Image (cartoon, rainbow, N blue to C red; front, side, top):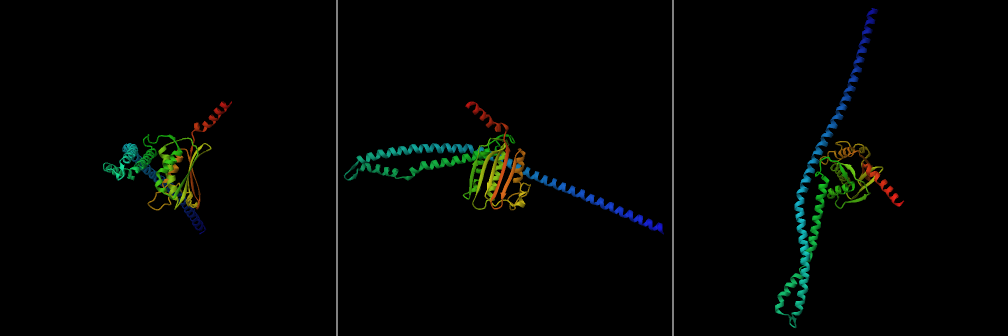
Length: 340
């Protein structure tokens, strides 16, 4: 009887140990499964982000090629029209001078043809023609109208040039080149002028910045995205501050807006792929994610400063080439040698 009790207790203990081991193994298996699920989730999000970026890059490349093609096709007829308007404007200036000479001559003739009874009959027709020409205000307006037309065509030509420079597809795709941040800021601003209207004031504080080495079309995309976001962050009237500077060997470009700012609980997510606070159909949350990838891909840095109710400032920094950093010191040494 005693042996039976001991055997029962022994088997019960074995059963408990077995169940415990099974429970431990199950917990470990769950932990491993959770880790694998989390890893798969991260990989899925990474692949989704990569897919979205590839789609976006493909669209941008297609858009760039289309823009480059359009600007190329526009240049020829635009140049033709500008040339013709310039010729007509110059002819009108010459014609106006001739009309003035004619008016003076007719005035002299009419004064000699006046008698006590008024204008002699032979001069009446000449007087009518003179009054028709001198009294026609349209002739006086023509030079000004043609000058306005020329100015408008010049603005279109500059826009076409900016579009072509913005796409930069006239050069090898992905080619690293010297890049002017100040000029690029102005080009990007031109692209969003339709969003500014008269409600947003743009302030520029550009310091001298050496050219940086980058893929121009990509950094153009960064600046365009940041300025576009700034215009969309402002409801009603507001201001945007564009600035460039050099700090500790970094070329810096910043875009600040007077919008409502970014809430603290959302600030840490703004560079995450597919994160967006915009309504459905107004964005897929890839803009800042791609901006972050492009800047860091160039060895640069991006940061954001924001204050709720006061606005947001995005700062992108690119390394300044060593030659550009050392140049001022060389110039100072040359000045010192010349002074000595």
